[in-house]
Length: 270
Image (cartoon, rainbow, N blue to C red; front, side, top):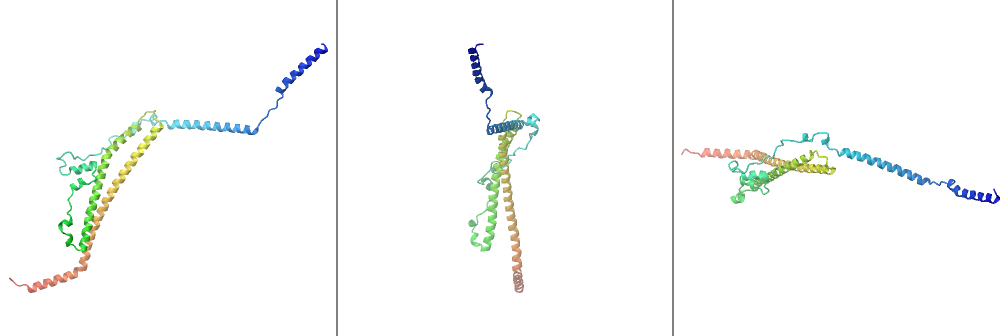
């Protein structure tokens, strides 16, 4: 090989070495902070993915209808008692209390039906009684008049509440029946929103029923209050009579004895 050719080969080998050397001998640069961040991101993403999978499985189990395991018809209550309607349309059956029977079915806020079946109270002013009474007698009369007026107000309110609750009870029973049919529906197409709406409807019906029970209890308490006042007035009247007897008994007896003796002394055979 000539000297010139040898120089060309050496130059080519040198160029080839310069081209190949950087690819084989490059320096790897790493950033620890970036590496840690990427590792933490991967761990968090894996944790979130596992949690979402667990939630999905849990929601799937919660969404399963009970109808998959048992027949829901066994929870249906049959032959529930119907709301009774007082017969007020048959004139022969309720000849004198027709309006009041209707009030017990639908309510009567004005109290017209109740006043139509009760004994009316005479107004003392019309009889000229007030001018003849003293302060003590007037006090006793107003107490008894107050008892009668209060009893009328309580009876009118209780009659109206009874009629309204009876009328609404029939509509409430129909709503409960419709809700019952929806609850025992075995369809799997109902979403969680439908189930929540059923729960909301049941809570609403429960609130209405609790309100009705409270109204009934209030009416009963008011009736008991009137009975208590009436019993208290009767006992007070009897006790006042006994106290007056003890207080004025001796004078009355002495006056009676003196009058009787005088009558016997002055009596002559006709």
